[in-house]
Image 1 (cartoon, rainbow, N blue to C red):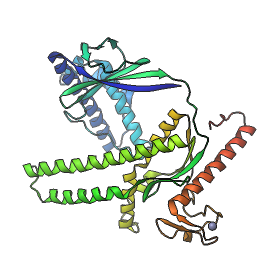
Image 2: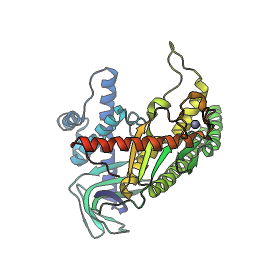
Image 3: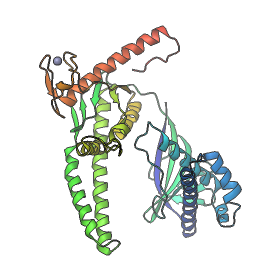
Image 4: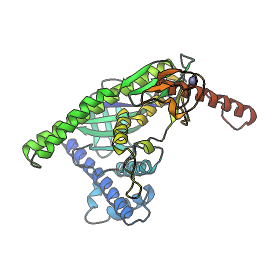
Length: 398
Ligand SMILES: [Zn+2]
């Protein structure tokens, strides 16, 4: 198995190199913003947008030839092209229904996320790296590089510049240490309820910060816009935001690492996150019901970062030699995991499940997790049959 690993080091550029790097970052930012400007304009006018090849044509034939953007010729053209490729990717993601959390790309601002990429033309010698149009730049080599170098990203954080070297490393195929399977319900009150009776991440922990956030935002609204106090308040809001994001990321990482370690096979619901987290307000002709309750629920869903969680589980399983399988989501919250009786009334509340038929009572998310595990086994059984009857299908990796 080949894996790709990024290794980041701090650069120690000369003053001239530092200046050139700022300039390159600026040129790449300009190319991104220009591409976005064109795209937005085309979307407004409802004409098809331009993809990488057309944008690249614009770059070399129009922008670089024009008087007002001729300075683009100073920047390494491969990194400008790479920026357009990233832009292309961002637009494709933005229109991809399977990536519900992706948004329209934004204009880049100076000093925020300054970076540029070299797909080729670089080499490393000792603690120096040779970069196109920059020459040899020293870096703090804190560890040895492994494998084949694929690309290099130069970025700025605060006043320091860094280089991230993407290496492709050949590693033996991992074999998962465990043979068990687990069903996970990505719940509302707990982040992940598992069929092995473990719970991960309490969503309520976020509520406290959410209240603080709401309060801070109210305070902001009372301040004079762009005054010093307003700026200070704005900063503290930003701090709360990043605190919530960090908490969530930590919780997601902890949960996904442990689940991936314990189980070779993970079953999850195939759930349209975008559909569930979409505004509950509805339209003017068709106003939504229970708008307030649903928007609270939506917030919880976004809190838990489901698609991030799924992505983490997927790559951790790949690393550990396990896999993630998605199963259809129908009725998992209404079916009794003990007897199979399915009814809306089984779900007493958001968190309680009580079977009307056999009396089985359990946390609703746990009951759903058990159903997901059962559904997963059923899917696998079908899969195995399919392999037996059709030769085309790839054997399932369990
Ligand atoms: Zn039952």
